[in-house]
Image (cartoon, one colour):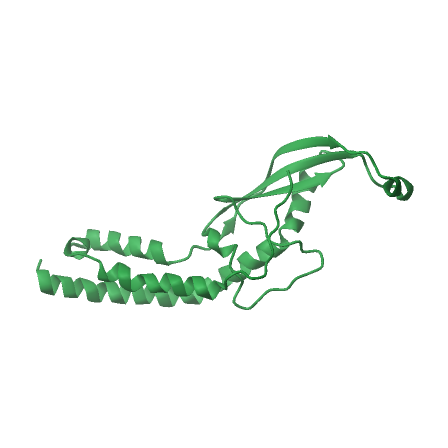
Length: 195
């Protein structure tokens, strides 16, 4: 039960993800059929489906929970015995940070770059809709373990927060583009294939 940190370097930029998503619009719109746009209800469903495929959903974190722990006893080495302040007791707490939103916000470098502190160990990537972090403490203490786990996630949350912030303006312009192209395609299909 150890944290799996990955390097923040050599990841694709978030702007590349936005470009890939925008590139999907023409294909999705141009593959529509008359039945996708004929009546208002179906057109609304089609609009929702295309926006769901293209738009990027912001990550929102829920409350972390300590879901498990494991105890290990590790003998102290000579240096640890001489220095003092170390414990042979190791409680490895498993902390889960649930979230909603697109997991792609975790593994794309923010457009404005990032800062790397000496305390940062790298990124922790999610497993489905949660981040799992392990905190090793000399006592069983879920509150302290959650605080330490938050520290391990400092770079990860930096990436997510920066990527979340860059979605707003992009989303407005892409939504307008989708709406405009869908309306044009609807008018074209109705004109060609009738009501």
